[in-house]
Amino acid sequence: MVDAVTVIVDDQALAAYSIQVPPLVGDPGGFYPQFTSCYKTSMFIPLGEITTSWNWALEFEGTSVALFGVTPPIQYNQTIRIADPSVDKTNATQPNSYRAYTYPVSSQGGQFFTSGVVHNDSQIRIGLSNADGVAIDYALVTAGNLTNLQGQTILVDDRSSEIFWDGNWTMVDNYSLPVQCTIPSPQAYKESKLLLNSTDSVNFIAQMQPHANSTHSSNTVGDSFTFHFAGTSILVSGVTPGPGLPSDWLLHMEFVLDLNSTTRVFSPTSDPIKPHDIYFESTDLSPGNHILVGRILSVAGSPLPAAQIDYATYRPSFVTVAEKPVFPAPEVSGSATATSSSSIPTPNPSSATPSPSPSHAKSRAGAIVGAVIGGCILVGCFFGILWLVRRNQRRIRNAPNPHTEPFTSTAPTIYSEQDGPSSQLGTLPHSKRPFSPLHAASLSVASNSNSALSQQQNNIAAEIREPQNSPVDARLRELQAQMDAIEVRVRDNAPPSYSGEA
Image 1 (cartoon, rainbow, N blue to C red):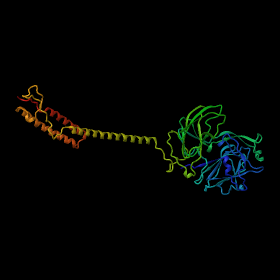
Image 2 (cartoon, rainbow, N blue to C red):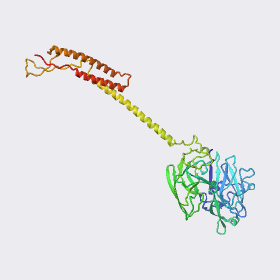
Image 3 (tube, helix red, strand yellow):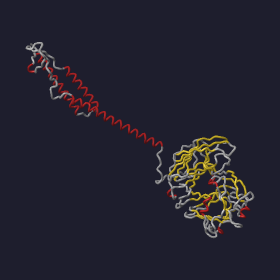
Image 4 (tube, rainbow, N blue to C red):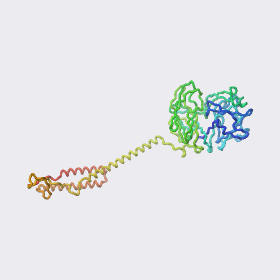
């Protein structure tokens, strides 16, 4: 289930929603005094004409509307006349059809009227009459599928499933805070005075509630909340973290908007503890998706303060509810995370693609590293085998040609009888060498042995050139060892030296 989209309309913007239909004359007139606890610092106090009660009709685009403000103290009439669009017998353009409603409680700040739901979300009209002493703070309109959201401000309550709470947050509800208020006196309404003085005003204590009468509260270091939105501005509001002077406390918080960090330190001031206290605000954001994370960094003092988050507002960068992105829920680690009764929204194909979780990313990274290392080992083995094969091929090419006589040698030098001992050394061809029968026998044996060794070496060389099915590396080492042994035997079977005979 996805939460409804609600648009907040500030009191100073209500005149733009007035209906100009006789006998209505638009807004009833009035002024906007500064209040210490309200949305955007002011409330609208409507005043009628002399000796007459005022009538006021407003038209919104949505399916229902609620009014927030301060109900009149007991000095004033506790009944207001309202035209509810969900009631067939009421008509906002006909004041005589307005029905009487009694305020829930006198001198109370918060929601004092909620209309029924209408099926046609293109127009929703309400009418107000006979409401002296009321102060209107803002209207909250539930948007329909066709509601134009361009230029509007969306409010997201702390109970909404769009805000994710990580840690030991506790939802606190059904409480109010005393706040000093001043409104025109009953006599001022009768005379329609727009300027107040000490004799024309009434001072009273109003019990102010946070928006929708709930907040999320925590004083645990490390607790945080996350809010995804698509818009061009963001504001986070709540209840003052602790009482005013002369108390001594400190709350240090960090707000990270799209990886840009801002820290704020809250401490006692002369203002009383109240709702609608701004915790964080950022305007002129680029249109698109944004992420805001608020985190408690430190708390100190007596009494110990607590972050008390009430709602967030933002200007959307989408035009209709159908275009609103549905963001995935972030991972939270809190052991006692407080959540609202609404379910977490499910991402749709049009929303931003969620980032992989840290554990999944680590698994993918490990698989990639393992594949790279394995590939490197295989490549190294391939080049190692190739190097061994080429090294043995070079040895084969540098070895004597097996088809020529490998033992042809130069005859030892001899002294010629004619030249004498002083003559130069020379060589003779085999056909002219003088040798004895012993020499001939030795040469015959050496020749036969060398022929056998030559044939064995030729066979090994051929086998090197044509590897068998045995493992290449082991076979090459075996063949190399055999060739080395043959070379040793060849050296041992070299032809015997001989000297010339007289």
